[in-house]
Length: 116
Image 1 (tube, helix red, strand yellow):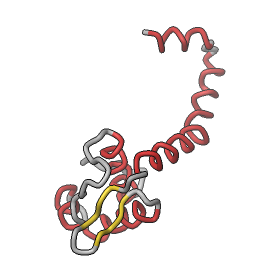
Image 2: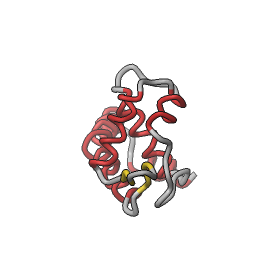
Image 3: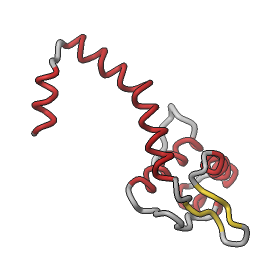
């Protein structure tokens, strides 16, 4: 995993795990890597991974089952989709719309691109 300089590493790990859930690498009930295993895999301090896992737990995306490890919750995919949709609509889409207006790109041009 390559990290970007403009975003905290724990958030990048959080988003990476969310992406793996959305892409089906992790399914409902699947056990994800332990904190130690993930830290080794991505090459960071276990405390950084733990911070990511705490965020995932706080959002009810994973649950820690004592003696078993971290597992994907039943509602994980829906929670992630809702969160990312909200972020897109509030943060990314306004910038895209601004550029579309600035460049004079019409709805018809966008629809043509979508159809292809």
